[in-house]
Image (cartoon, rainbow, N blue to C red; front, top):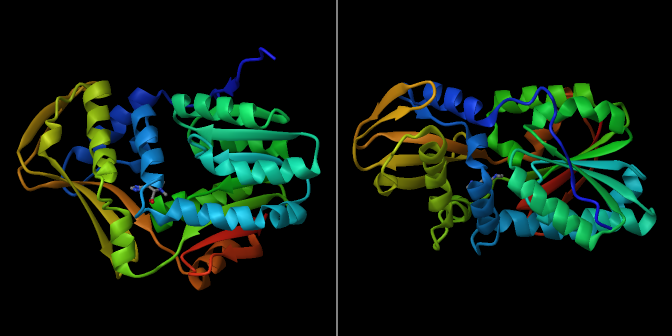
Length: 323
Ligand code: AVI
């Protein structure tokens, strides 16, 4: 009815370009070189990630969606009517099943997608409002943690963190994330957490080395973003994508390997960086989980296990946790 999307940006939110510049300068200064994976998701990266989720080898999104489709009504029965906050909503493609289940039992629902990409959020607002006119969408354009202070006003709330995005954190980062989230939620609020489970390495490696080469483009895009936003002029053709499963650590490790020496300047802060031929930059890890290990960790962070949902192959799990 002519009402535009409602977008809020928490006042504490950092300036994205400054934030990227500072982090890239620190991460690239010396080996082992790394970039924080959260910077993969600019407008272009969010589009590429959406394309990854449609690749035949990338079973995660499809498997999670099937678990959600089969259990959304059950989840709604367990949580009761709540607001929904989705961390890392992207284009909110995975949210349909939940919103449908909520709206089958209530006249309206308030949905708060959180994402760093404004373009992805605008898309999410548009598609959700078109398909679910009874959903009130208030988009939050920020990093996850910057949205946490809103949570106390949203209780009763279901926070969703899907797609095994928590696997992109190191173990330490995951613990601090869970502790901070738990501290921001009220007792009795819920967390719906998607986790990719340990499985055969061939299946895992295929998922991060799709034949169409979309994941390679996704890895290269973080350097394309540096060229766009920080003026780095890196030769993107010199970057090869490598994704290997490290079985001892039970994680996929993604590196950008440089086939030619690169010397460039990051603006601001004007830091000169040289990457030698043959050197690589770690852009992501994607941890894989064992329920018997991760559930006690989550419990120690203040989340009780309400119910565990999985698929027939036990490839993926959706955990409904109660604060
Ligand atoms: C967003 N996240 C859960 C993805 C993953 O599977 O770790 C990111 C990704 N990187 C390459 N492919 C997918």
